Length: 157
Image (cartoon, rainbow, N blue to C red; front, side):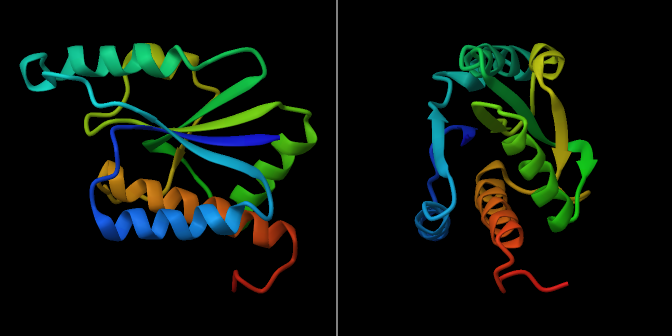
């Protein structure tokens, strides 16, 4: 199975890029993992929030193909412990799913259409994080999930 982290816009901050690169390197030992970037919408400030979410949603949904299952990282989603996320990923791997796609939206979240087409919503926390910082948190948690599944000493209860 492949895991894709689909994100809106590039990561600007150097410290976040370095962290992402570290976990991308680590994840190679466990799974085919990639971060796919949908470019920022041009002239988004002139669009209004709802139109921006709609346009980003169209781009997100254009990536949904047969054999792919989309799960949104969303503040209103279900919260998991790290062990529960590991079990969730393991269940998806055992199901024969071709590709598991986790999506991090832009700064205003997702359009209604994206919500309708997603398999689930997952919350990292009740706190709000920048959409760029969430990329690092998600990647680290996916790495942590694989170390849990392999019984490696990275995660401590």
